Length: 312
Image (cartoon, rainbow, N blue to C red; front, side, top):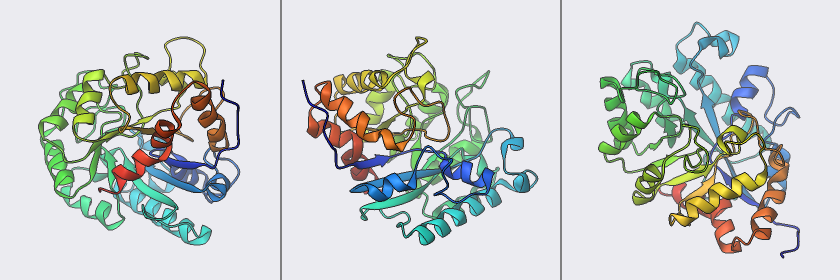
């Protein structure tokens, strides 16, 4: 039995929706309404937090001032807000070599709106990771809830090629299986699933199959454990132990160097026992108490994420 102990936190979290929540509420990133708390980052030894620009499938879920504007304007405003907040809070922006940083990512490439030239804005603001879809179909391809998925559209195949050319890692979280294999057939240099669990452990189709994990692993990609309770268990009860179950499974597939964290804070129903970023120490201790090697836990929490991001 391992005793619970004080932990010097080092975290690399591949996904949260705090930036969207900040845009919707017109509040600073250090307001007290978020599950990801800037104060926890400040207290940590090292913390890298990916901040997604989430574009909902339904325009009515956008901030009011952007509902009738080109989606790329919403992306630019979100990026500018993150840069401004980083300056105000004195947190490095998009700096993998710093001890702490906030990184801009894209969740749902529908922001491109059939215009391949809009990728220039992603490059301008340093986006290194982007999903192609959210849950429904868009101009690029099918999300996991698409009724008749066909994979990548003609435009989507161009986007995939341009992302590969521009060293933007393709995030397969939210993609349909058809779209996943269209991405794989394009032989991406960098591929990951920022916030997805194992479909073998929880059958929700937002999770990835063992075959998909093996492909990501073969490309030296990473998979971030998602803390959304409905992606963790098929039962009616959810706990931190369910996160460990997914970690056990991915590790059994040889994923020690490929497993990371992708909490989905501020964008999901978090699992019981992890209500905010303040619970990372509790989660870390749960791994140790359940006989995970410290060296492996450190890889999952921080080292694998930094190693992957540093390649981009």
